[in-house]
Amino acid sequence: MSKKRVVHYINQFYAGIGGEEKADTKPFKEDGVKGPGVGLNGLIKDNGEIVGTVVCGDSYFNENPEAIDEVIEMIKSFEPDLVIAGPAFNAGRYGVASGAVATAVVERLGIPAVTGMYEENPGVDMYKKVPYIVQTGNSAATMRKALPAIANVVNKILEGKELSPKEDGYFERHRKNFFTEERGSFRAVDMLVKKLNGEEFVTEYPMPDFDNVEPGAAIKDLSKAKIAIVTSGGIVPHGNPDHIESSSASKYGRYDIAGVDDLKEGEWETAHGGYDPTYANEDSDRVIPVDVLRQKEKDGEIGELFHYFYSTVGNGTAVASAKAYSEAIAKELLENNVDAVILTST
Image (cartoon, rainbow, N blue to C red; front, side):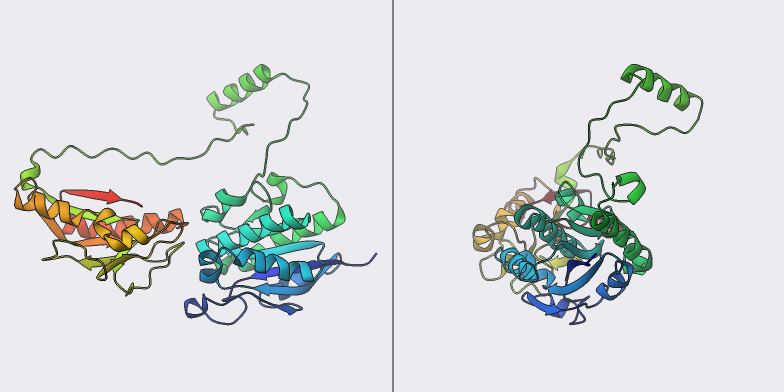
């Protein structure tokens, strides 16, 4: 039996081109394997062979809508039977790109696609219903475990074997109807009894896990309160000096607005991708209301506006990253005796 043809999609880092400074690399293709493809190729050698690699920079892919068309045409040129993307671990932009490519492969080329991501990568929720997204660790430090897990799913697909989310470690793509001898009421009571007895049981309908956040106490006297601004709308000084990414931000910025009454065009802008920035760039007060708060400060309606604001981009940013930013920002706000925060988006 001849080996199946496999194509591998990776970003600029795993192609060995460079890091963030090369994230704007345009799509290109090469014959054979690169980066983690070397390990994958050895793990699927009995069933398939990586015949080509397609590379695209994370920023280029996420900032240019036509990038997906370019990448898919390059993949198609290799006449593949299956495509592997990543693994992306918890890298947000890479995860979104890998998920988008894998989804387009399934929908446009009609062939299977497999990728790998950490559970908090935004690409999981965005794309898990179409391609196989194998669960990986948080970072490339878990590459040795990730590659065999991905290869296992690939080999099963190429061999035509049955796959299971629980057994093969990929995120559930869709629910399937099944028949069982016991009706639902009996199964539900059985699970309840096990739960009451402290015994192990497995639910048939796992529910999403949401954080519960206790609301803060009301401000008793706004006229004496120190107010800060925090935004995921990406407002930054002109030129984006901290190079906050337009999608899947890996950092946040802290910017001094002491003495600033109005965010003027040409002095401030948004780094945020995914929406038309025209109005935010014309007047960044539309995203963070510095002008209004300064007026309220002068009118005595609030005590003072904190002289720094904090900004990042919410577009595709990983939940774990957002939590880390919030913890660091909250620590600084508490140290500076800030009483309340106005949190804005786009």
